[in-house]
Amino acid sequence: MDADAHRLESSLWVGRKRYRAVLSGWYLSWTQLDKRNREHKTVSVPVSELIGVEEGQVELQPEKKVTESDGDFTVFSIKRHRKGRGSGALWTVGRIQFCCPSRDLRDRWVTQLRSALKTHGPSRPHRLLVFINPFGGKKRGSQIYRSLVAPLFELAGISAHVVVTERANQARDHILKKDLTGFDGVVCVGGDGMFSELLHGVIGRTQQEAGLSEHDPAAALQPCNLHIGIIPAGSTDCVCFATVGVNDPVTSALHIIIGDSQPLDVCSVHHLSTLVRYSVSLVGYGFYGDVLAESERYRWMGPLRYDYSGCMTFLSNRCYRGTVQFLPADSQLSSPRDNTRCLSGCHVCSESTERLFSRSDSGSHAGSLYSSQFSQYSSPWEGEWETVEGRFKCISLTCMSSSCPRSPLGLSPSAHLADGTADLILVRDTHPLGFLTYLHRHTNSQDQFDLPFVEVHRVKAVRFRLPPGEEEQAEQEEPEVSERPGGMNWISSVQHLSARAKERGVTGAKKRGKRDFLCGPCCRRSPTVSVWNCDGELLPFTEILCRVHGQLVRLFARGIEEGMVAYRGTLGNKSCKGKYVLHT
Ligand SMILES: Nc1ncnc2c1ncn2[C@@H]1O[C@H](COP(=O)(O)OP(=O)(O)OP(=O)(O)O)[C@@H](O)[C@H]1O
Image (cartoon, rainbow, N blue to C red; front, top):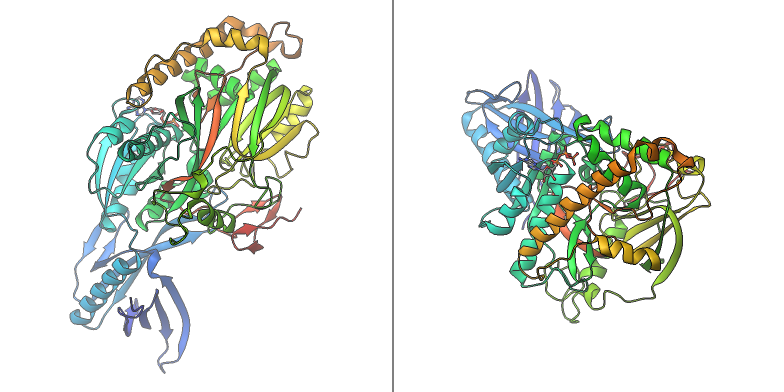
């Protein structure tokens, strides 16, 4: 396609100033002219970052107002602010009001700009299915969508079918069962729990259509075509923060509008031959499992319950025995301690795309996302399993940095969003002060892995087993999954078991009583088995197998933009093709 097919150049006015405006190639730029036609400051906006073009003088705030006039048109584009409350850029809507000397010229500008937008934005969505959780976070999901997001979708010409959920798992079931023809993506307005519903729906639907069983841990799952968008409106919006760099509904809506596409690794969690859940941010045993189980008792506290339960769990000073086996990833490609950051355009992730999706037949090109034969899946268990036994404060597996506003660098600051690996963090038994140091380092710029009782591995798969004596006890507690995988029934089975795990978490905590938490290190009887926290849900099984599926889903996001990241106390400006180089 000729990049200059939409070229247009003319004099235009912005307010009382005259400009030479040019639409050329991938940019719209306007240069101020003085009375002698001398050029001054030029402003340039990539066409890919234009939101929309409207005839007349158009204002969006406080509500849309259009003043018709023959010569005016309004261009809306993305404007970046570096001082968001996060590590990424906060995006807002920039508005520029142009005036042409004639209606004819105005119409030519509007037509050319709109057609350039179509040409340069082939991945922009036209139709979206939006799920709003009216009870997520501070219960402002519907209001956030109506006041901040819907007007932008309308401006960008996106038609949205909105479903305000009436029960948990409605969004997931809708995606699994209803006709989705014509939708370019699904969007959730809510927190990580809502995102997880969409994730399970989209992956499940894709596998159903491909005729694949999700219950076989060795199966080559089909990457999903349908993009997922997240409008943050929950009490925990970790996935949004880790993939955009900021929790802001307008920024996320703009990423959706321009059709950004961020591949994401997903970890499947199996128990025997049953898929239990998918995870993108945290599969955690020990401390993080106990905090979640404990927090269920204090739902009435709202988001504060996590802080409170965190304190109580810390004071209880528990550790758990177990055997962790893991399949290491190729250490030549990257490592969790290489002091890099996965940023927008990350070269580790893009090279992984070629590695993960190169067709096994020689004639095809690498990176063909939705082909049916993928080299990565030829043998998912390739390599030597390593084994670590011991007593652990916590075991965490994360497919991404898992950064959040409280922990801007996250659980594993150098983890990648889409390289087909996850980071396994093992925190061995230590004294409470040591563990506190470890936890505290998540909130500052110190290296949380530089502690003698912490080890971190970049892995492709992880297996957890209880020690021999405790295994039987745990197995007895675990109810049987009666239904065979393959159909939809497993979902309700696992759901039922998860609900029981939640109850067990609550009653277990009740049984342990306050004494167990408050007297901390002097407690005599601590539970010997913890519970897994999988992206904020308690798992009903203790012995699990986790496997990373590289780039299984795609989000409307682009990763954290380069140059916006404060890392280890230094404001980032030094980069290496999407790699952030640390100054330690
Ligand atoms: N209408 C509804 N009624 C009750 N629960 C719902 C509804 N819609 C969605 N849910 C469930 O609510 C859970 C929490 O939602 P969400 O993640 O949006 O909010 P949150 O405030 O971040 O939640 P939490 O902190 O409890 O994880 C999700 O797991 C989702 O399945």
